[in-house]
Length: 591
Image (cartoon, rainbow, N blue to C red; front, side, top):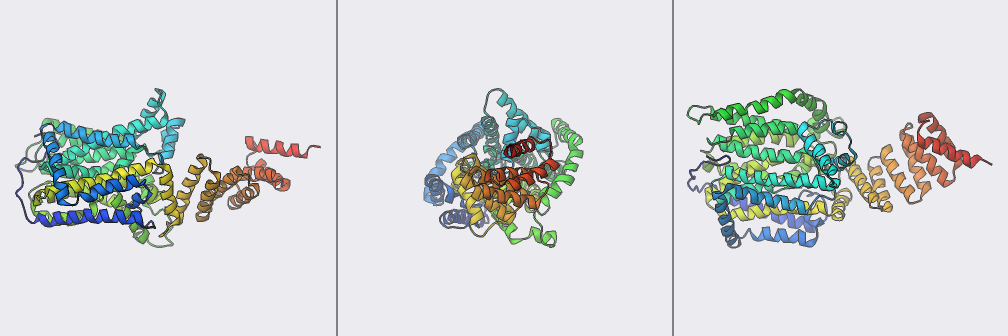
C-alpha cells in the first residue's frame, strides 16, 4: 500500500450520513451568507469573517459568487465532473495531484505576498534578516529548525544577492508548495472517493493558514506542513498501510521547529498501539528504526522544551495577558470578549471545525469501522486545548498565528468527518462548494494582507468601530498604524494614531511616539507636552528627556531645556545626544 493511502475497500452507502451531508451544505450556506452580510454592515464583531468589506470589489465578490453558486447542485455537478476526472488522473499518478495543489498554493503566495506585515513578529523578523541580529537575542525561544529556516537560510539568500523581502518570500513560497503537497496527501489518506479526497484536501488548505507563508517568516508555517503530513501518515498507518516511519520523521521535524509538536505525541502513541494489537500488520524493520529520530530529538531538545514551556510559554502565551481585576484565571479565560475572539479565530482558520462534533455524530455509522476516527480524535484534543487556553502577548487579532497550528489540527479532524459524510451519503457534488467555500476565503485573506492601504483600513475599524477592543489591543494596533504612517511619511496620520494608542495605554513609550510625530510636523509645543508627560510617568526615561530638551530648544523655552539637560547629565552623561544638547545650550548662552 502506498504511503498516505486509505484502505482500498469502499464503504457501502449509508443513509445515516445524509443528515451529515445536509448539515455540511447548511453550514457552507450559512458561512456564505455571513461573509456577504458582514461585508455590507459596519462593526467589527465578526472580524474573523468580514475581510470582504476591506477588499477591492473584484476580490471581494468574485470568489464569493463562485463559492455561493457552487452551493446549487445543478451548477456544482458539471464542475464536479471536471474535478473528478482530474482526481482520477491523480489516482493513477499520486505525485501529479500533490504537484497540482503544491503549484496552486505556491502560486497564490507568490502572487500575493504580505505587504502589511501586521501578524505576529513579522516586522521583527524582517529586521533580523536585514540587520543580522542574533536570533537567540530576538527570539530566545526559537528552536533549531526555526532558526535555520527563518534566519540562516534567508540571510544566505540575501548574501547571494536577493533583497530581504525577496529572500523571505522565496522561503514562504517553497513552504506553501509543501503545504499544498501535504494537503493532497492528507486528502488521499482521509478518503477513498476522488471527490471526497478533493473535499478533505481543500478543507485543510482553506482557511487562513496559507497566509502564514506570505511573509511572517516563523516556524508556525512549517509546523502546519508537519501536522498535515503527520496526519496523513497516521491515517495510513492506522489503516494498516505504510506511515509509521513517516510519523516518526514528521514528529522529529516538528520537535525541531516548535513546542506545539508535542501535541502530536498522543496520536503517535495511539497509532503504534493500534499496530501492535494482535492481528494488525506488524511494523517493519524501518518502522522500528525510525523511532530513533524523535527519540534523538527529544534527548537533544527535551530539557530545552521543558524550560521553554515552564519559563516562557506558561507565563507569556497562556497566562492572562491583562489583569482580570482579581477574578480567577478561569473567569479571564471565559470572558465574553475572549470567547468572541476564539469564535472569530476558528471561523478564520478552520471554518468547518465548529460543526465537526455534529458531523461526527451524524456520520458515526459510516465511520464506525474506520480506525481513523480515533486517530483524528487523538490529534484534535491536545490542539483543541492549546487553542482554547492560548493567550498570546499581542492579543488574538495580531497574534492569530499562535492559533493557526492548533486550528489546522481541528480542520484536519473536521475534514476527515466531512469526507465521511460525502462518501456515506454519496453526495459527491458537495465537494465543489466545500472546496470553493474554503479556498476562496484563504485567497481573500492573502489579498487583504497584500494591500497595505485596505489592510490598514481594517485595523482602523478594529480600534474605532463597535464592539470595541480591550485597551491593550487598541494601543498595540494604533501603535502599529502609527509606525506604518510614519514609514509612509504621513506624520499627521502617524500623530493621530499614536495619540489614540496613548489614550488607550498612556505608557512613557506611547507618549514618546506621539511627541516624535508632533516634532516631525514642527509642532514643538505639543511635542514638549507629550515628552513631559512621559517623564512624569518615568523619570529615568532617557529618550523622553532628550525629547524634552530638543523640543524646548525648538520652542524657545530655554529654562525647560536647561532643566532637561541637567537631568540628562545625571542619567546619561556620555550619551552623544546629551553632549550635543549641552553644546547647543552653551552656544545659546555664548555672548
